[in-house]
Amino acid sequence: MIRKSLTAMALVAASPFASAQPVSMCVFDVIGANGDFYNFVKDYALEMKSHGVDFQLKPYTDEGVAIGDFNAGQCDAVAATDIRIRPFNKFTGSISAVGAIPTYDNLKTLLATLAQPKAAPLMKDNGYEVLGIVPVGAGYLFVNDRSIDTAGELAGKRMATLDYQKDAIHMVNYVKATVVPSDITNFAGKFNNGSVDTAYAPAFAYEALELYKGIGDKGGVVDYPLAQLTLQMVARDEVLDDETAQKAREVAWGMFPQAMNLIEKQEAAIPDEKWVRIPEKDIRGYQEMFRENRIEMRDGVNGAPDVYHPKMMGLLSKIRCASNPSAAECTAANRE
Image (cartoon, rainbow, N blue to C red; front, side):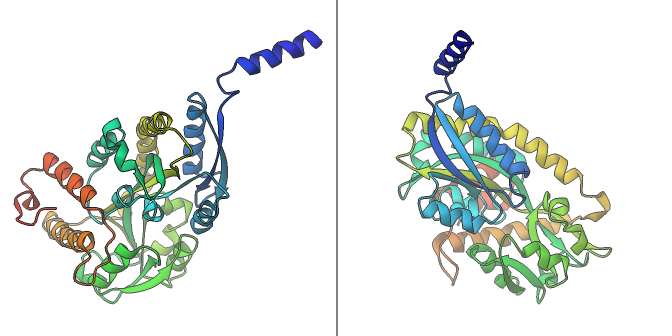
C-alpha cells in the first residue's frame, strides 16, 4: 500500500500538470457553467495545462459582475465579449465593429492573422494582454414583425440596446429608432414580453434565451450579420510571460473549427421560415451606411463616440477588399 502511494506521488510529481502556474479566470456565459462558451473556455484551459498554465475557472451569468471582479483583482484573467473587453484592448475590442466582418471566411482570416507572433504587440494595451479570441457567432436583428426588414422600418421602433455599447446606441439613434437601455441579463426578457420590438444577438439566443417567444408568429431573424461577436480572454500583462501568452493565443485559434461547428448548428436550429431575407441591393446600401458610421466612430466626429481602433478598421478593410475587390468601398477616397 505504501509502495503504491509513493508510486502515485511520483507520477503526479512527474506530470507536466504538477508545476502548472495557477491563474484564476472569471468566465462569462449567460447560461453559466452549463453554457457552450463556458465549456469552450474549459477546453482551452485543459489544453493550456500542457503549456504550464492551470486556469482556475469561475463562472458568471452576469458579464458586468465578471468584469467588476476582474477589475477588483479577484481574478487574474477574464473571459468576456469583445464589447466589454474594449477598455482593456481597443484594438481587439473593435472586432465587433458594426458591419465590418460580413462573412465567417473574413472572420477566419482575421483571427488567423491575430494569432501570429507578429501581431503580439497589438495584444497588449493599458497593462493588459489578450490571451485568446474565440468566435461566438454573427449578431443578428431579432424582430417581432417581419415587415421590419429595412433601416427605414426601424424608425420609431423600440430596440433593446446594451447601455454600455456606445456604437450600438449611436447606430440606433442614426436610424431614428428608440434606445431602450438594457443589459445582457434582461434584454431577452424585454424582447420576449413585448417591451421592445427588436433585439440584437447571436443565433444561440434563439433557443438558449428563448427569443423564439418574442418572435412569435409574425416576427423573424433578419439574415444579415450586423457584427461578429467574440469571446476574448484577457489577463494583466504580467500574469504570463510573452512566450506562454503567445502559445495561449495559438491554442485559442486552434479552437476555431470547434467554435464554428457549434455556431453553424445554432444557426441551423433556427427554422428556415423564421429567417427574413434581404435583397442584395439593400445589403449594398447597408454596407455603405455602416462604413460611414464606422469612420465616424473611428474618428469620433459628428457626435459619434470614439470607439473603434484605426488599425483594426484598416485591417478589416483590407480583408474585405481581398475577398471582394469589386466592392465600392475598395476604391472609395475615404477608405478605412
